[in-house]
Length: 256
Ligand SMILES: Nc1ncnc2c1ncn2[C@@H]1O[C@H](COP(=O)(O)OP(=O)(O)OP(=O)(O)O)[C@@H](O)[C@H]1O
Ligand SMILES: [Mg+2]
Image (cartoon, rainbow, N blue to C red):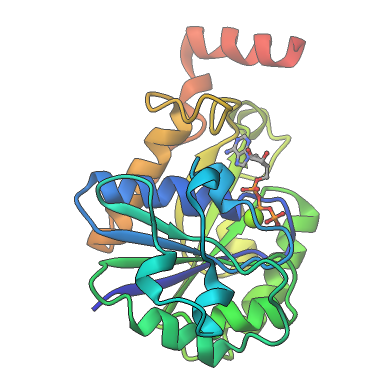
């Protein structure tokens, strides 16, 4: 039975699509069969982020409207990782129930990750109602935490098995000098378990792909392990800036 996890946030641009793509990639590297569904019908870009934009023929709305079978809309990214692109022009007409039916046909996968649109309106409800678990992506900023709080309050009304958070774009140098909330502080504010932290890293996703040896990738590897096992280490975004070399890095970052 596939685990169906919606990746949501409230606020836009905090890293939902990035988390879907890189968490998906890392679950796949750990030998899990993963499919990511783009449920952002207006600003969809999962295909670009996963590098398969030239291979997309059918999308979610084609499946839901019966123009193709689920299998025809699945685009393979890698051996264990596939995506289904969101419906161009689909929207209000696509119900949560129809997305759920589509997902019921994906039980050969270990994980179905749902890339949710920003906001807490119809697109959010559609994605959440098709999931069993939710990951809320937050940035360490007041506006992100405030929007996440609204999203979490609504998520609590659904009968989800779990609602947890991933803190993305953490600036370890700023956390160390007290200018940014720590991951522990954020967990206290949002009152749901934080299962992952990802550093702000220019190499997270570039035109050439992901830096597989980068810090963000290491953070996603730990997150994938934790999601599979149910516990485990969270990446320490401050470690890079600790000690004599770390303080030089922090000083260099300040001077950029
Ligand atoms: N850890 C990170 N470090 C640096 N840049 C990041 C990180 N995570 C995401 N980004 C960048 O932030 C931007 C927004 O990310 P992304 O598209 O994943 O957000 P989103 O929440 O899906 O946005 P939307 O609400 O529009 O769907 C992208 O340019 C992405 O490369
Ligand atoms: Mg997105």
